[in-house]
Image 1: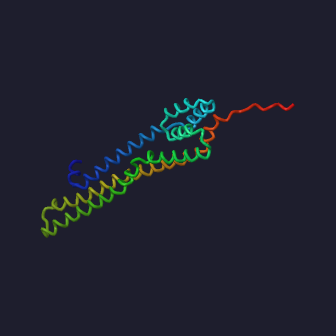
Image 2 (image 1 turned 30 degrees about the vertical axis):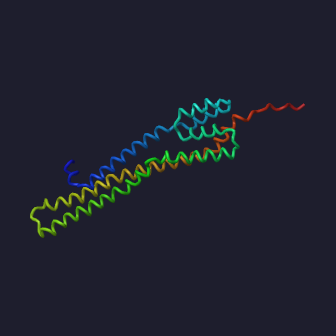
Image 3 (image 1 turned 45 degrees about the vertical axis):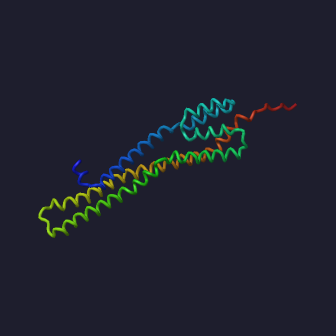
Length: 212
């Protein structure tokens, strides 16, 4: 294995560095999405029950114990419960937009690595081929095949290395982007429900007068 790395040259070391960065991003994002994952229906029901009773501090405490984007939206809604409903809607949409950078953190880096790694592999192919042809140009005919093998090895190893890094990077990039889009779509659809839920605690119900 070490022999292959040595034969791959400087470009292979760069590709390996990108592989480490990609692995770190993938692990960090998977752990992040696992941490913010929650049963949204259960969370919504718990908060709604507290809000309807007027226990806003309890509702905020429930949100503080959940790191999901939904809990962040609920907190914004509760904090602005005295605003008009139109203003609440705009504030919730703004809060949802502010969640985007946290969801997309480092994902663009993974996408860049997915595109750059095979290009670096191609560059290694070019430099390795140039090295092999340079040997032929200097010596005409080469009696020892190992002299040519160094350039050919660099060409093949860097190409393989670039592809090996790019394939999982592309797969996880697409997976993360799809997950982010799903969360954003769900957040947008929850805005109206949040407004109704937040305002349910300040709408007292009066008993109907019996008709005489």
